Image (cartoon, rainbow, N blue to C red; front, side, top):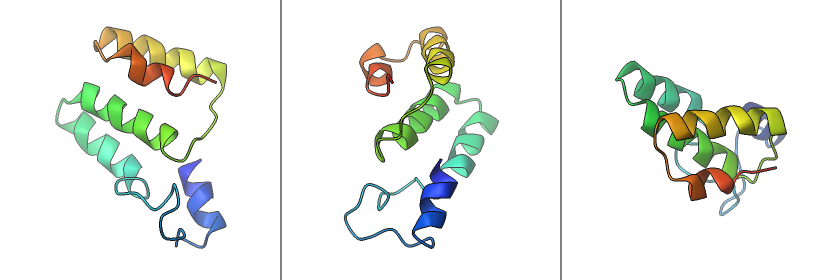
Length: 85
């Protein structure tokens, strides 16, 4: 979703837009870096950020996977609820 959103604006999101946020365009690399450093909770929180900031709608199935991982990692459920479809 992020890649498509950036492609739609030719890689240059309008100033002040939901895509004009730090850690979105390179978000996949950030998540991978956190995972590579055994920071799964922070990686999941960043993934949730990448969904919530641009207000992407995810499938219910994807949400349930994120919700389950968040429970296992003891992430605040309010954060998870912010992306519920």
